[in-house]
Structures are given as C-alpha cells and as structure tokens.
Amino acid sequence: MTGGSNSIGRHVTDSKQQLIRFKARDGFELDALLLCEQREDKENLPIVIHIHGVLGHFLARGTPRLLPPALLEYGIQSLSVNTRMAFMGQIMGEGIFDDAVYDIEASVSFLKAKGFKRIFILGYSLGANLSVYYAATRLDPCVRGLILEGCAFSLPDSHRKRLDRWKSIPSYEEICKKAVEVLGEDPYRSLDDRIFLIYRAWGPTLNPFHTEIFTYKTWWFMRGPKAYNAMAYRVASGIKIPVLFLQGENDDILEAWEAKELARLVVEGGNTNVKVRYVSKAGHDCMENPEETVSAIVSWVYSLC
Image 1: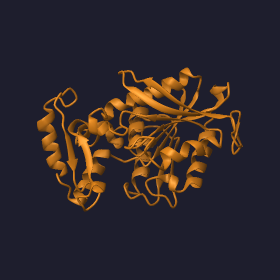
Image 2: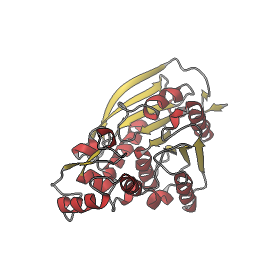
Image 3: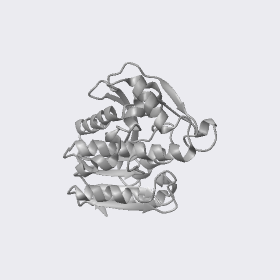
Image 4: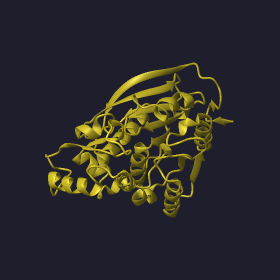
C-alpha cells in the first residue's frame, strides 16, 4: 500500500530532527521539533502537526513522545509544537485558550513555507479541543484532515463534573465567583490576574498529585462557564475537513459517549467524512496500545493522500 511516493511500512533511515522557532501572528514565540525525512519532494510527504495536552511535548510521555517516531516508520513526518498552553502557560497567564489557535495557524504557515502540502493536525487531550476550535474557524486547502485523540465534549463541563465529584476546594461555583471579582467586566483585557490552587481537583486527597493550578484568566477561557470556544460541541459543526476521532476504551477522564456525540455533530454540520475509533486496552492516552493506534492513524492518513 502506498501514499504519494511513500511506501507504508518501509524503514526510514534518512531522517533528521530539527529544533525550530517561529512566531504566531500576535508575536508569541513557539518552539517545535521537526522530525522529517531528508527529501526534496516535500509536497508529496504527509506531515502531522502534533498539538499536546497540558504538559507540552517535551515533558509528556505517551502520545506526544512516542507517536512521531512511530509514524515516521511509515513515511509520515511530524512537527511537534509547544503552544502557549504548554508547561507554565496556564500558571503564568500566557495560556489563553482562544489565543492558542494562532499557534496552530502559525504551524500550518511554517510547513507551507517549507513546501508541505499534505498537512494533518493531531490534537491530544486539551490539544484536541484546541484543534477543534482551529478547524471549525479556519479552512486551508493544504490541511487534509484532523485527528482528535481524547477530545472532551466540553472542557468546562468536564472540569465542573470532576470538581463536583471530588468535592474540590474551592468549588467550581466559588472559583467562578472569584474570577468575576478579579477579572472584572472584560476578562480578556483585564490587567488584574492571580494564581490560585484547586485542591481535590483530580482525586480525594490534598496531595499535590490531586491539585490543579491556574490563573483566573487562563481558567476563565479554558474552564469557565463562558469558555464557549473550549466547548467542542458548540463549534464542531463548523469542521469541514475529514476527521478521525480516537478514544481509549478505558479512558478514565472522558465518558464513552463523547467521541460519538462529537462525531454526530460534525456530520450534522454537513461533513460526512468522519470516523470514530475506540482503541482497545488504552486509557486516555491511546499510545497505551501503540500497534492499534499507529495502524489506525497510518491507514486513515494514507487514505486521504
């Protein structure tokens, strides 16, 4: 089976890793890792832009670390981008969900300038929701498809349910009230912002492992009650490119229905090229079953090339 000039399953020996830096339209500086074959015909090479979860690429395990080299074995290149949401973004105030879409936009522009024309976007966890927002509001002929791994139906609703489940300190409602008090009438332009902790956000103890940290502004645009762009169900119908949903059968963060319901909304918006794949023996990170995950992505990507 072939895709373009690439043979699936061949061993790639002429690859190169390159650390690169470029800027989004608002001046935010992005770091990325390009894993690519040393070939001139880049227009024939499929390449995946990897958009990470909350940790960023260079601290995370699983999908962000393992998937790019696995895809390269099948002739699929990768650009792993650390967006403004990575690492300290939600703590230092730079990780505004609505602005991070500029980072995906800049990544697509970077690859097009390098000659790539078969671009795919893979969003993992938080990155999946961000990728939904990007694809629902932008259409580029060089972006051939969207892969959404562990995409929440709604980040704010998921967050609220989790805090309610563990009886967090403070509660979702208390955080919302304080955020309004701190940020005022215009949260986006507010110059007043503060870091805060949520105890028992991920479990029943007060241990650091079960604690979350945000600024009120980053929380408001990613997890707050008016974070509409982080509610995938509100924007998914705007996606007009092919979509592959991946969700682990044993996902302990998402509910089983979320991928199918999001897919239904995309189809209702007029996009019939939508596929849902539940990965067996995998939790929130589908690379807990690398063989099944890589196979699903590779076959889908080449079906569109």
